[in-house]
Amino acid sequence: MDMQQHEGKPIFSSSVPGEQAYHPDTLQAQQFRSAVQDEPNLFAALLAGGVVALVCAVIWAIVTAVTDYQIAWMAIGIGFLVGIAVRWAGKGTNLFFGMTGAVLSLLSCVAGNLLFVAIIVSQEEAMSLLEVLFIMVTSPMIVVEILQLTFSPIDLLFYGLALYVGYRTSVSR
Image 1 (tube, one colour):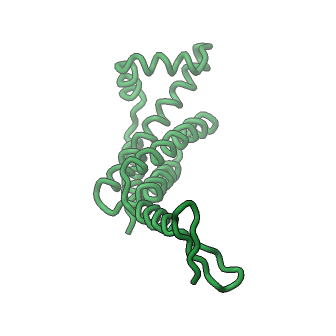
Image 2 (cartoon, one colour):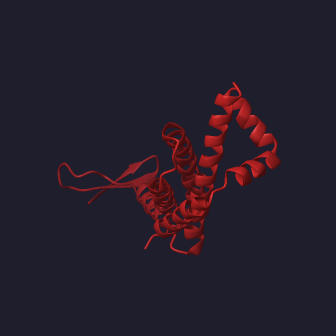
């Protein structure tokens, strides 16, 4: 190995032709990045899981609006996709990551149901979807009332499936 100087710092290069040189600072940065990438990160899990949960809620609402029917495998799919996002981003192995996946999956299903109601109301009342969503966001009691009026016992099955699958798939083993 030959040692050269670059900006006052040593660079080690191999005497073997075609082999790349490496810098000690670069090696330390790679080791640090590798260590950080393997560390559990609840914030990353929340962020990735939240984004996937939001996308899944929109899909849930659209499929329900188009078919006029709630499909059980959608809740399983939401739990699975949210759980995978939490596991991939969070790399967690404890209860917090499982609970994160479960709660985000449940919230996604509930948000999908609320968004479905918003779609129906906007069509029936000749309002824009954004107007209906604004009313829902600024009036939490309306949201509670909608949830009470539209609740069905089958919702418990859907929510339970989403919770279970979201929990089971969120934790790295």
